[in-house]
Image 1 (cartoon, rainbow, N blue to C red):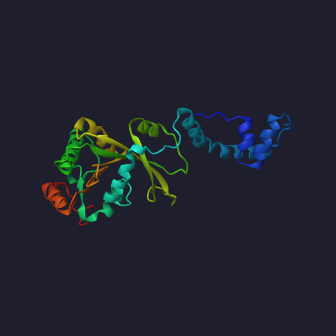
Image 2 (cartoon, helix red, strand yellow):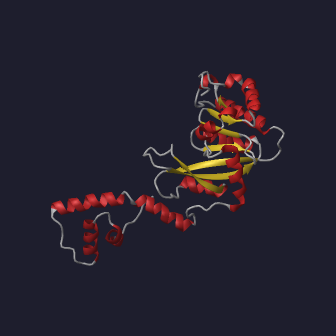
Image 3 (cartoon, rainbow, N blue to C red):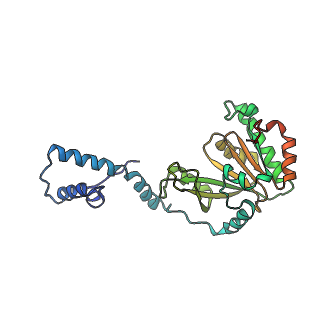
Length: 266
């Protein structure tokens, strides 16, 4: 994105007092010129200020497009209570739901020999088959649609109207905001925006979403309306929270060849 900065912008919002003063002098016709050192300092200040422009430009674009800081869709308020009852204070990603439900947890790998990423179309079909088999088993006799929860992060301290955010906002309902301590390498809280959709248990619908997760592009978890189970795929496998520990044991036995050889099950 290219941003056009005017003298008035620099005069009012420049990074330093020096750059604001120089911009006002130039804007008001009082510019007397700078010596070499002064020009060098001004350019350095301008570069530092310019680095701040893209995030502000994103906010401006957000306003123009009508995509301000998202507001929760009230029709999903009921799901907040269901999520808390089923997942506690976990955020909707695999590494968070796992420790909150350890007694019902099992991890399956997507490809033989714990290979992380698919290289061929045959490998993609194999990992998608595994995802669908476990999702079908978790759903059981429940004929209701799945609830998909899609996560987008922002660790930059302010809402960003990125193209990916706009893409998700067109097709998903905004549910709520979580704070994620693990995503921000600067030891600050990262903001996780959670979007939701109801989806049928249908390969044509789910495969594109699961494929993006397998390629480490998106993070999307699946559950039912009561959050009685959670399926949290990641690039390389899936963390599964079954309805009961007995259901977990049955899944583990049924798909023993998909388990990790690591003693922790990871």
